[in-house]
Image (cartoon, rainbow, N blue to C red):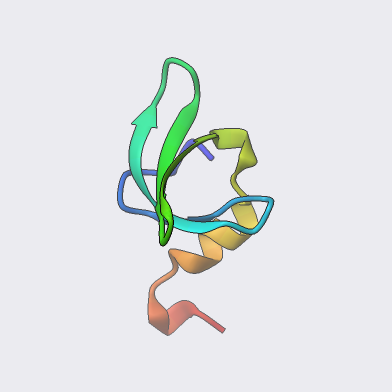
Amino acid sequence: MASIKKGDRVITKSGIHGKVVELNDKDHTCVIETGAGKIKFERAALSADATLRLNKPPSEKK
């Protein structure tokens, strides 16, 4: 998940959807903004497959 950047849409492994608002390289965490507010997660908790699918341009989604 090294390619994650601020503003990316992500899904955690537990199914929480949100947008990355903060990245911390020191402790490998990120803050995700969801409909319920902001939550801090370990980057390892992000689902790589779902996140990559969400961030594809619309023309590539199938």
